[in-house]
Amino acid sequence: MPTDFAFEMATSSVRFGWGVTREIGLDLADHGLRRALVITDPWVARMRPAATVLESLRDNGIEYALYDQVRVEPTDESWKHAIAFASNQEFDAIIAVGGGSALDTAKAVNLYVAYPPEDFLDYVNPPIGKGKPVPGPLKPLFAVPTTAGTGSETTGVAIFDMSAMHAKTGIANRRLRPTLGYLDPENTETLPPQVAASAGLDVLSHAIESFTAIPYDTRPLPDRPMLRPAYQGSNPISDVWSLQALRMVAEYLPRVYDDPTDREARQNMILASSFAGVGFGNAGCHLPHGMSYPVSGMVKTFRMPGYVVDHPMVPHGVSVILNAPAVFRFTAVANPERHLQAAAALGAKVEGVSASDAGKVLADRITWFMRRVGVPNGLKAAGYSTADIPKLVEGTLPQHRVTKLSPRAAGAEDLAGLFADAMQAW
Ligand SMILES: [Fe+2]
Image (cartoon, rainbow, N blue to C red):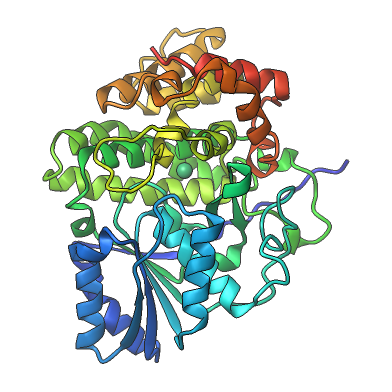
């Protein structure tokens, strides 16, 4: 099969600065937009970032409708709820305020209201959905992230939990990308340390996964350029962003965890999140994310301190990082040099380390950060047992979009071994 010869960098515009959220009303006015649909979750709705957005809209004569029922870790039902609300509104722009859940829900609303599908799963990634392309341009979407993690403001990916299947899946298309992301460190001020930790570990894993993904020119050649996936494999431009994101996380994640008032650390984590977003938004994630989807989908009773939600939940960053050490011990053999470069960017000593130890050195460094910011010691501590492994494997196998980017192919048996290894982290 011929392999691809090209990669494409697509990024959203972002604007960084303390207080840039206050500019949003002016931006809409300057775009000639008159009525916004503001999408957020019930918790953020009561916090300063949402209040700042609404005030800026009022000050600039922009009308708005507010939807504040986004579910943290959204599901197909919660998406449908938001889409139904939006379908009864008139609006010419969407503003998403919140974490990845609010941003992803807004992307879905934008698509489903503009081009209602015959079946809800038409646009959803195969094999769960049909993976139909987005038919045309969408309304302008302005993203105001309030966590420094998902990088969703830079990507064309929206993730949800398909409740009936207990598995996460999503929609990936460049047209879902926000028009502008507001990287405003003022908005992460109220982040509890555990939320900052989970989001920061998500950044860390985005960066390592995109840096260690298969090279873009080893993927199959698409029939036409439009079919080239957003997740293309590692490439020289993504590499720069991913490595720099790792250096920043290494320096600032422990600081932001220890002291949420540390302005320099907050500012750099929101930048690192976006840097990694540019990296993984074009290169892609692989096994830690693929395996995280059934982990979060199959949550039983686990609740992470610091999260104000009314349902058991493994936060996204935690569900990802719990798998990461096991994965990189497994994948390092495919490209030990890259695993060592990632470990070095995270501050590990790699001089004189042999290629055969690359996976261990990177995994140990990740584990060091996990302990440092207080995440559970492996899947067992988050409520899973070895009896869950067959179901976890079953939930990972359909995640082709990401798992096929793993530098080392992982079949069902390999995945079972990885989940077993991830039961205890240290
Ligand atoms: Fe992620």
